Length: 370
Image (cartoon, rainbow, N blue to C red):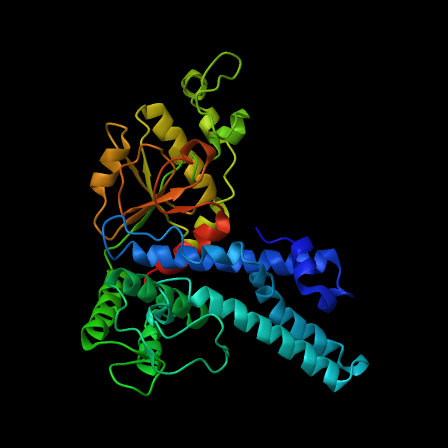
């Protein structure tokens, strides 16, 4: 995890005038941006194949000492710009160039360590070679790049297209400008690889453009904070409050469902839509009526679907292939349709998850109607 103390230690002389609060802000921004990128990438990957996701994508960005330099680059240049009147031109240039050189080393190490980067597959490249981020190497031989790595690469590039250019289609220009089957561009790939990456991008974009595709939200644990209302530990639904379980407390008085606060995810969902598609497993009619009233307190309207048997498996069966649902239930079937909303009680469940509102926001950026 990035933190201000390690940033100060890594950057040494460059931070002699910067406060701990400034350093923490820089670290937090980098951490948030990186997590959102990973979520966008895995949301796109969910449209590739059944249950596909890449849990370790860019994970070294949270641990490598070099990466304490990355979030500082833009901030440092901005800081030097505002202090220009007090610093000589040489001071400014030397600071920025030295930081850029260190960031180049960090980036090169990352690139050569991860198969989703084409450089990883060129056996002639080594860590001791110089690397210029502004003018990267040409004619990198990526013809041995596996299809699994190519899949992660396409989702990675498309995530950046959405983040930077707000358009998944921008990935095609990136491919055109950087990949060739002959020498003269950044990466050299075979015609089969080129057909694969363009075809995969086409397939993902078709699914994103599916007008029938819906984004569903579960209620409890996603939009409504039952655990917080009863003051029970997040990792234990079985704990008793005054001798009764959460379920027993609700059955005792269904009106409590109307009084419960929203989760921190609620504002993100409301920005995404004022008329959400809701699927809930509540069985009792009193619970459904109270939930409907609760939802209408927070949204202009809602498309509500209560499954008859009260099972997560039934929810999954109701969804179409390109639909997605944000759900927290630990027993929801393994499915590419599911985006797990992380809690202590579902921490052991395998699959693609969002762990806080900023990560849900990134997933919804991909899931909007393109």
